[in-house]
Length: 218
Image (cartoon, rainbow, N blue to C red; front, side, top):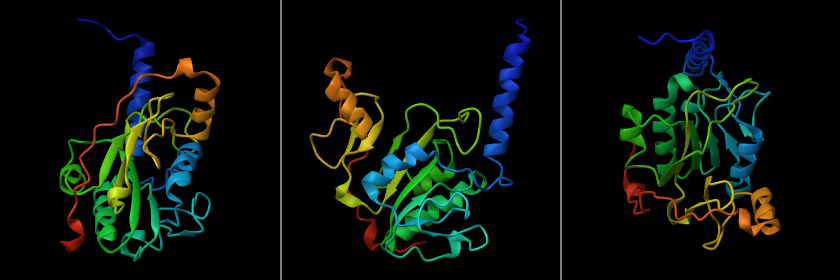
């Protein structure tokens, strides 16, 4: 029987502790990595952050825990939602239902494809979704999250065109059919050294053939 070394045990315990904290409803606010948000915001121009505090709000208009973004009308805002990790299912449903009422939503959540909420509110209801390359580091955490993340899109319809960055491999929603980079930094790097580009293909995603607009929330 193999015996784990002290270093292995320490690493395992650290991952367990981080996972317990991140997935606990006792810690509601885990700020989005600013550079990651900036890339998304350049594409979608968000106007509402429904899961925020006054300290970490990403949009001029935001809802705090006390205001309860789940109970608010999101209208026709362009919404960025990084929900409390202990209540993901409720927020995923809210994002979908808000999109039926006219909101355009980008949802950042852990990639947990084994969950009921993924199968009920994402797999067949989202316009598209993709998995983030690597692991994100939330807030002031010293280490990256012990789980992968995904981005889910609701209410954008045929405007979505998923591609993969030719430099870093990160999926992104491209404005143009010939777009090859997910950010200005990657675009400049490709221009400086085209030999660094990797050969990538269109991201595999569910075709945007959506007829949910005529449905009502259940």
